[in-house]
Length: 73
Image 1 (cartoon, rainbow, N blue to C red):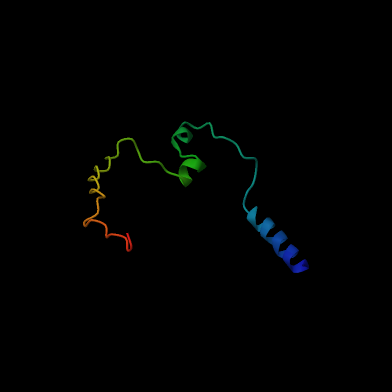
Image 2 (cartoon, rainbow, N blue to C red; image 1 turned 90 degrees about the horizontal axis):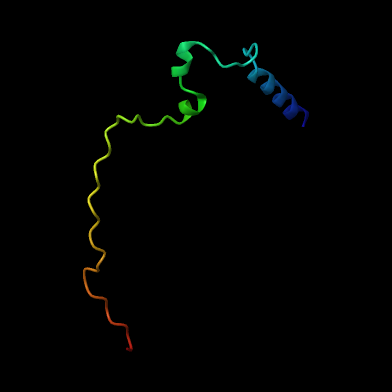
């Protein structure tokens, strides 16, 4: 149990490695055009993209042969 807690503590400390200072929104003009984290994880297709071609309609679902009669009836 102690080894698990120790490993979790080391992982927690290593995850914060290299992060310094407060997080803030940049006021630079170029920052407005950058993608947010949500947009980076789930990019959307641009509006100018070519739409997908229309699919052909499915054939009729009618059986190819008539159903067989039930036995005894």
